[in-house]
Structure formats: structure tokens, C-alpha cells
Image (cartoon, rainbow, N blue to C red; front, top):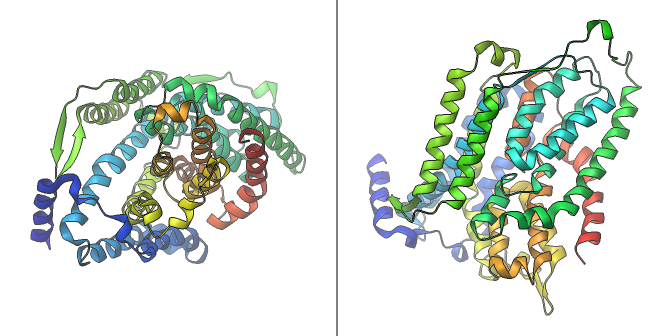
Length: 467
């Protein structure tokens, strides 16, 4: 088998992009492993909690292996195509994705906000607001990792706090990232495809303000209700009050380095490429990833161990994200290929919903991009629908402004619908659970929170902003 994989590696190197998976030849059954890993994430924590926490990595690997073996032994796909697709998704998507998360997770985990924070509705809402503002400029992952631990400490003595973590996911890990290409990966992909950096800021400002403002108001009312239901509502005692202080402030400079590395890869174009196994790697992206690794190691080197201890910093959340999303990135390969095939693929009925005699149906672009982003990775989903319009970035920013707005908002906002809609969601959930907060199950999160709170806002939003 090893010899066969090496042979496939060589073939992939020789044939390059010709070895992309042809989505028009795939039936819907190729998406079964992807559905399997999603159902595993949803059901195992409910029906076999201890088993899941011990073996989730093996389950992720199992679904990936089922797909890859099926592809290898398929007459229409074969070994070389399989190897090329794995290399392509690993080198261009998963590795950059996990390196960025790792850098943000490590650096933000080296910043400790000490002092007295009491989880009153005003304090909690203020933390949410600050995180929402920061998310567009330091990424949803960076903002979420920076503030989730202080928020948990502020609410340590409260009995009702699950709703606070859920709204934190809604706002800081998703909606807050809507204003710049740095905020959320789908918008950065749009930037690389030619969308102006500040088009996102201007076009998404009022749509994001509506969503964020609505969620903050709802949260403040809900948190106030739960606050007064507490057996003993926590209050600030002036005698025991400690002044707020930030330790590990040097890591803010490293956060700036992370943002600079990402911006560099978007603006710097040395027109230098390297080929590995048929996959073309651009120099600016290689430099970005090496800088992210260097920043991660530097943060570990210069940050006091006591700061990470105070933050209750562990590698468990990033390990869980890495293992599960490795499986998701692998098993998603046929699903994305089918979607890219458009009307020639087995999901043609979805593509046909997007256009009419009068042009793009913006409402459908918003809802389809959003619903699929809830369960697929929202970055490639954004690209699929961006490309499905048939227009270039200039046309989308001008004549078809609302179509690009619909795609952008769908990918960013609806990433909040499930734990797997956006990587920070899962990381926040893992950190909360490691801190003793019993988070809702996959379906509990969706039906008790997303469906009841987010979906009515989506309906109102789409009526207001997508005429």
C-alpha cells in the first residue's frame, strides 16, 4: 500500500491539475462518509460520551479511510487522483487553516486578563461587544481565544451560564468577523479572488450592525432574566475588588505579527511557485505559514508558564479541532467537487435555484450559502457560490453588489448555526467543557438556540438587505 501511495504521489506530480476530481461523474453516495462524520459529531457525545472523548480521533480517521479506500479502488477515480486530492486539500487548505488557528490559539492563550470581573448582564454584554468589534481585526479565532477565558472566570459563580457561551459563539466567533477579510476565512478568500479589502467593510457594516445589535439586545434581556433567577446573584464587592491588569502583553505584538503575515500573503505577489506532488504552492503562502509557525514557537518561548497556567491553557481544544477537521476536510472533497460541477453534478437542483430570467436570486444565494456553510467548511462553500455566479469580482462588487453581499453574509453569519460551521465554535465549546460548563449537544445547540434565535433574525435580515 505504501508503494502504491508513493506511485500515486509521482503520478500526481506529473499530471498536476489534470488530476482534480471530476464532480460531474460522482453520485450523491460519495458524500456518505462526510454525512457519517457529521452524524458522529452530533450523536456520539449524546449516546456514548466517554467513548467519544476517548476515540473521536479514530472515528474521524475511520470515515476518512472509508472514503479514501473507495476512491482508490474506484475505476473512475483511482490512486493518483486520490493522492492528488489529499495533497491538494492538505497543502492548500487544511495545513494553512490549522496553522492559523494554532498561532491564534497559542498567542491569545498567552494573554491573561486579571482583576475583578463579575458576570453581571452589563459586564457580560460589554465583553461580547468588545469581542465582536475585535473579531474583524484580529480574526474570530483570535478574539474568541482572547476573551473566552475571562468571560468564563467572570461567570464562575453563576448557575446559568450556558446561554452566555452560546451567544459568545454567535457574536465573537462568527458575526463579529464580517467587516474585513481578516475576520473570517471566506472573506479572505474573496479578497484573494479580487474583492477590494474595504468593500467588505462598507458593504457589510450595516448588515453586520443589524445582526450584532439584535443579538446583543436579545442577550442582555436573556442574561438579565437568568441573573435574577440565580440563588445568590453575584455582585461586585469593593473591598475585594482587584484592578484589571493584562499579563503577557507582548503577545499583542505577536497577534499583530499574525495579522501582518496574513495581509502579506494577500498583497505580496512575487510570482514564484513550487510544485509538490502536482500541487502548486505560492511563495507568499509558504512564507506566511512559516511565519505563523515561528510566531507560535516564539509565543511559547517568551510567555511565562505561570500565565498559561492561570489561563488554564491546555492543548486539548486545538487537538480536537485538528483531528475532527482533518476528517472533515478529507471527507468534504466529493461534496465540494459535486457542487463545483454545478448543473452537471448530482446537486444540480441546488444550483438551479440560484438563477432566474432576471438574473441571480440573491435570497437563494444567502440561504443556500448559509445552510451549506453550517455543515460544510464555510471557506470553500463561499468560493463555490462565488464562482457559480459566473461573474468576476469587479462585476460582483458593482452591478451584482447584493449577490456578493448575500454570499458573504450567508457564509459568515450562518457559520454560527452549528458547532462545526466555523472552527472557533468548536474551540470555544471545548474550552467551556474543559472548564466544567456542560454545553448543549450538537442538536441541542441547533434546535434550542440557532433555530429559535438566529433563524428569525436571518429572515428579517434577508427581507431588509436583499431586495
